[in-house]
Amino acid sequence: MTSLSSNTLSRWSTDELLCWVLRGTAAIAGTIVLLIVAFLIVEALPVLHHIGLLRFFTDPSWHPVEGLYNLTPMLWGTLFAMTGSVLIATPLGILSAVFCHYYAPPALARPYRRLIELLAGIPSVVYGFWGLVVLVPLIAEIQPPGPSLLAGILILTIMILPTITLMADASLANVPQQYVRGAAALGLPRWATIRGVVFPAAKSGLFTGVILETGRAIGETMAILMVCGNVVQIPTSIFDPIRTLTANIALEMAYALGDHRAALFVSGLVLMAMIVALALAAEWISRGRVYG
Amino acid sequence: MYRFIHLYRLRMCASLAAFLVVAGFGTPESAPAQTITADPLSGKLVITGASTLAPLIAEIGKRFESIYPKVRVDVQTGGSSRGVADARQGLADIGMVSRAMKDDEKDLRAFPVARDGVGIIVYKENPVQVLTDEQVVAIYTGKITNWKDVGGKDAPITVVNKAEGRSTLEVFLHYFKMKNTDVKAQIVIGDNEQGVKTVAGNRHAIGYVSIGTAEYDELQGVPIKLLSVGGVTASTETVRNGTFPISRPLHVITRTPPVGLAKAFIDYAQSKAVHDIIKQQYFVPLVD
Image (cartoon, each protein chain N blue to C red):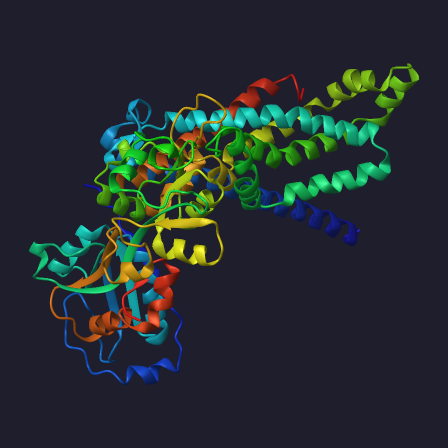
């Protein structure tokens, strides 16, 4: 009896302890995000105070040393690069996961999966360097100058491809086997099974994959900085160089002073706002439809 | 006005052997804003001024601290004008100025530590050998957009510019009397190495980088070529003797003739012992 009651007691206190540890870690994670936002706002405040938020969208150009702070072209640059790469990477990634699961012989599927995992582990600066010395000169042959929105989209596509492929792969693996067998028993062909049974069953995982890859595409800095040309302009073709918000911060932070530096924190705030918008959009789209 | 103060706090762990070296110097006389304790060559040295010089002086400061463990070197940026103002008012022991001294600054003692030169680079096989200043301005402002207009092949020029805030950009614009808003660039880059790689990867590009970087990379076989400016070859040699036009001296300044800790630091910053740091930062040492 004694041992039983002490056992119960100890289990209860372990639960209690675990609960507090979890609360603690959750609080830390939440606080860090809030602290970062607070820090961004505090650092950006001087320039917001001087010139107001509106001028970041109405100024004629981005020349912070001369007091011109237009962020709009970089906002578009980020959006274009992100949209382009997500549009290419998503079908590629999902279809390659389908291939891996339902079409490839196991002897091919295993090494293929390892290869994709390897792709996910390559640091972004390596992609950037490869883009700079291989991809950019190639594009320059077609249409000078070379560093361009196209180069950025291609590099980003390669970088986010493993994210969506691995997520899609994992969610396809989670589709209950009896669904697939049931479809086979009904005499459905393979592609019809995939389209009509597997995709609907796996859509929440696929959707999460898309959100993750989009987040990565927005946040990517180093590779983009090296291949995009970093000219602040709204591109008129995919061969025009662009600058993204992340590249803007990385490029100018080291030597920025005063209002210029604060303006870069405003770029950070805008970037943060984009991520929040993405999270909200994901929440809104998925509400009761994907996860439900 | 909101003035941002960037603080490089430097502290190196003590090395016992260095105490012996400390004994070799005399007792410093008192200087403004300099805390002097009983031990010679100890205390805090406040250095403020040009952001171009700050990383170099900070690195020199680190090594200085490792030799004299009781010394702390505080390097803060805020521009050359802050360096002058702080040295004058005694807010800093030493000021940093990344340009030639002006006539109304004759009251200050200036000590050159290095020179900074900016060279124009093109792809190695570009047939263009020389560009006049007017041609460079026309290329950078978008008035000339094809190499054939300056004696090269029929190919569009890719103009490589630097990101805002970089001192190389400042020196370049100052020499060619341009504003950054006038520049029509196809590529904007960050540091010098990125500039070299960009030009090496694009045979129709023109860019400008620190001469130290370009010369080093050219020696390593990177396919770039430094163009001469105003008839003067671009090399660390012509930067050092001051004949290369797109260059500037980097000074540290004091209000009174330096004594004690400040003198020791300035002597050290001008000595051969820091030439490797100067080259690492892509500047040109003064003497050999």
